[in-house]
Length: 320
Ligand code: NAD
Image (cartoon, rainbow, N blue to C red; front, side):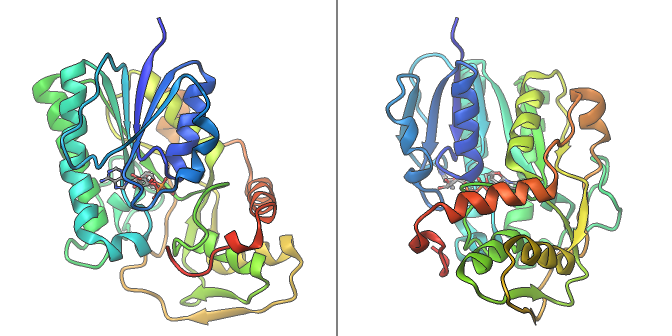
């Protein structure tokens, strides 16, 4: 019997890739999105498919779906600092009320639910690399607190539904992910560099560029999420690429790829910017048999080629 899956945030960067993956595996897919940060362009190529439906709906409001549901993937949430600093209350609401509604739906339908948490639950980590057992170093009233604490609450209420209502739950802690359909103007380093490179501008590095990040190519992430959903593991699991690089070295890699004759310029570091980020993926390797397959050079080439193929007016400059 064909399985039916609901993907909230389905018109976003990761949600749209998830829709494609589940359709290609033979599922019926419902994408739900209020388009606050997403874009119908990400999924318009799916509208013609008989197994695909789109519901324009805000998940902080009661969710009604008729018929059966086998799986829910709750990915609705602003995800980048530029977004959640602009819409902090909506960010808290989608993490709290949106997750609550999705869990209620999972309970009512007897569906398994996977929620999209984040490496931001570790805050500015005092442990490196971050294992799932680390509880984090988050400033609840700092500018990023609205996102970090919404996701921490999301994990907490998910475990409560698991323990008290026996809902079948999965929690993925996603580390920085990039690839086609990410928003170039979402304020994060990697898309910002690619956007600047496409427009032939100098690359902006915040601070001295010694802060590190680990970037996971989207296809690898989707594979990890797919395996986690179908596994029996119900505690939080890191999915990300442990290959770590300083932002300054990364800017140099982008310049090497594009061959642009531009400079790297430095600007002051924003408040609460994490200094280091690297997932410990031992659990994903042992339990899911998963590890990233796409190296940074290849992932960057694919991503750059994708954006280069778009009309230049889409190499966005100003945040949406
Ligand atoms: P995105 O902004 O591209 O997608 C999020 C989608 O959720 C958008 O389409 C948006 O319109 C939708 N949305 C937001 N609030 C909603 C609401 N109340 N009701 C319905 N839809 C709503 O972001 P993304 O990068 O695809 O992130 C998807 C999920 O993955 C988020 O939960 C995010 O926290 C998580 N995540 C992403 C990353 C990453 O590197 N991209 C890292 C960690 C966690």
